[in-house]
Amino acid sequence: MSNSSSITKFLLLAFADTWELQLLHFWFFLGIYLAALLGNGLIITVVACDHRLHTPMYFFLLNLSLLDLGSISTTLPKAMAKCLWDNRTISYPGCVVQLFSIFFLMSAECSLLTVMAYDRYIAICKPLHYRTLLGSRACVHMAAAAWGTGFFHALLHTANTFSIPLCKGNAVDQFFCEIPKILKLSCSHSYLREAGLIVVSACLAFGCFVFIVVSYMQIFRAVLRIPSEQGRHKAFSTCLPHLAVVSLFISTSFFTHLKPPSISSPSLDLVVSVLYSVVPPAVNPLIYSMRNQELKDALWKLAQ
Image 1 (cartoon, helix red, strand yellow):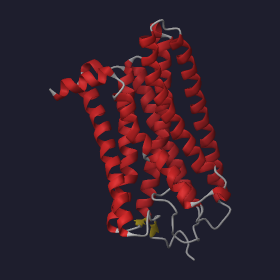
Image 2 (cartoon, helix red, strand yellow; image 1 turned 180 degrees about the vertical axis):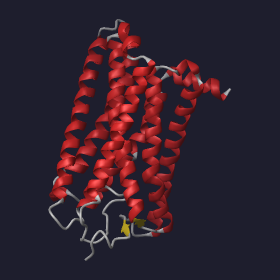
Image 3 (cartoon, rainbow, N blue to C red; image 1 turned 90 degrees about the vertical axis):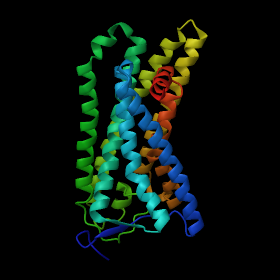
Image 4 (cartoon, rainbow, N blue to C red; image 1 turned 45 degrees about the horizontal axis):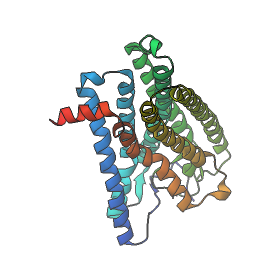
């Protein structure tokens, strides 16, 4: 038995028991990571270099790509190193930094997705007020609010989580430092304080999700009034995948932090954590670029 003052490192979850399977996981995660780096890096470069894309929608998209790059770089490099060198350890400060970074970037992404849904709602449902409601200063303020909300949210949860005494060993049943897994090591009822914060955060995230869904319902109503079938198809093909990824991101986050311990298992927790921490950063560039002709044209021009 140990307490948090004597813990110097944590043991992360191993993906497999054999070297061959660990190597297979390494190549799998490397492919996802490179795809996320390439996709998000191209979006950031194209939006920053092409003046035609200096609009609110692409400004928020650039911020989303930055958040996606940060979140996937927080988890996957360590996971790949663990597979390659069979080193499951992470230092106590490293675990603190990783947990803070993940919570910060994902909280900011949830806020930014809400802002992006509002941007699309104004653009499609109230186009005459678009420039008035979403000027450059308003866009900067909304993006800064998303980043700031994520920062203070993560700071509060990280400080609260690691102030709880830990006496049930140092084995974290996850491939990165995650709040529910750290709380399982607690030896006192003080973890209820952090559990209460998680419930409050989940309620806020659910509010963001409801706002996104309502915004898209209004968007779909407006799209259905478009006389051109091609226009309707273009709008639906862009909005539906985005809504699907948002739903996957928020629902799996809910499940991870609010599920009862009775249905918890290492394999299920691993799959769910991959769905909310790895899949969205890798899939978002495909959704926003492959179905966006302006981005394709700007990328082609930059390549030439």
